[in-house]
Every structure is written in C-alpha cells, then in structure tokens.
Length: 348
Image (spheres, rainbow, N blue to C red):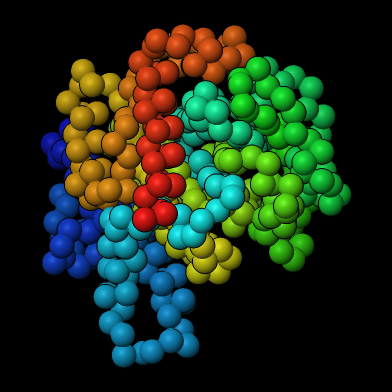
C-alpha cells in the first residue's frame, strides 16, 4: 500500500480501473468507490473514458438496442477467459509481441531470456528488436546492426536478410539500431503503416522458426501497434508495483482496438508479473490482485527480482548462459514451459 498524504492508494484501487468488480458499473462504479487523491482519479478516469469513447465508435452501425455498459463490461470480462491464453488455431510459428508502454516493466529482459529458455528446449527462436534503443540487440552482443529494421519499413527491404546469429543456442535476432527513431516521422501520412511488419513477416520463410518474439518499444506508437498487427499473441510484462498498473487500462484498450480494426486473430498470451520482490508485502499484493482480476490470463510463473538478471546484459549473455542456477534462470525456464504448454492446450 502506498500512502499519499492522508489517503491511501491500494493495488486493488488501480486494478479496478482495468477490470471492474462483478455487479459494478465499469466506469462510474470505480469513481464512486475510490477515495484516492484527485490526480490518481483523473488519470485512471481518463483511460476509462477513452475506452468508453472508442467502444462507442466501434458500436456505430451495429445493433443500437445493445446496452453500452454491457458491451464495455464484456470486453473486460473476456480477458479472464481461458481462451485468451491459447492460440485460436494451429500455427506453424507462434508470433508473440512483448508489449507494455511503461518503461522498466521487463519487456526486453523477458524477450531475451524467454527466447534463450525456449532455445534451451530445442526450439528455434527469432527475436525481433523493434525498440530504437536496441536494448535486446546490445544485450546479445550485436554491435554492428547497420540501419537495422529501418530499411524494412522505408525501402521495402527483406526482413529475413537481417537475421543474425547469437551466442544463445537456438536464438537468432533481427537487430535494431538508433536509425529506427526516425521511422514514425518518415512514415507520417503513409497509408497502411501499421501493417508493414505483418506484410514482411507473414511469409513462408517464417516457418523455419518455432517462435518469433518481438521486443517492442516502451510506447504505443506506430511500431508497437505494427507489432500487435503482425503478432498472433501478446505477452504483457508488468512490474510488481502499484504505479505500473494504471497503464494496463490503456494497453488493453489498444489491444481491443487493434483486434477490431487490424488483427482479429490477436489474443493475449498472458500477463507476466516481473521484478517481484517476495520480501515485500507490496509486491505480493500486486501479484495477488492481478490474479484476482485477470484469473488464468496471469502466468503462474513470476519473475523474481534478481541481481543476476541485471548483470548479464553487461556480458552479452542471457541469464541461462550467465548463471544457469540463478533464480532468474529458473523463473524463465518455468515461463518457457508454460508458453510451450499453451500449444498442447490449444490442440485439445
């Protein structure tokens, strides 16, 4: 629990904005229940208001007898269904985007180390670094990535020509570079920018890998939306801190819009609690509230706070190579098993 003056903001207060309690109105019920400070109220309410407006847009032309509150509520309730964690159909290659617009949530850490853990299980993995900061690229020791993905977006380049081997067994990478910073400005006004990556990826050549993991930038701009348009699933790393939760409403709203307008097959593979310090009540409360609100959408695995995970990028290695017995290595191996188990579940 965090104290703000004389009024406390609990994890459940923030999560109510992302997933309303049963029987309550998803927008106004939250505002009447919460006694948080006005800044917190305004921020969360704005996210919900945006969701309501976009939902109203999407309902235009549809049956007007449907209750607006029912439609809005059903979108959130769909998140807690088991099917959200299963691909809808058998896929030769699973394309998973690691997305969260908040920095420091563990996207790159998860993308790199999940890829390495899957590679350790004899799976072939292609990691696509879609972040202009090129953190995943640098982590795996790739220093000369050239213009990276910029040519794919601007000059109709072949993404598979950029594939580079890494020291992690079974893992290859499409590197990023600082050149990617200018891609949104270069594509401004262009038609269909959000589906460029999907067009480049959905090719028979992709079938040589079992998994494609996309490390997204900490924004919800053209690159991240393009990743969601190209992916079959998204994996959402969430830092175990109350301030990291308020952005979930905006992210889940964006997922719904992308699903409606660009990629009907997009599902949520899972929500992953990261940087969990089990010594603190606060972190455990966050995990508990995530499970309460989102049910089976939350992975059983949590990624514990671990100094070894912070050290291994300096050596250009995944946690599996840097310290195979560390808590971080054990956690990402457990996550890899959960991700692989989803395939078996989808075949039943």
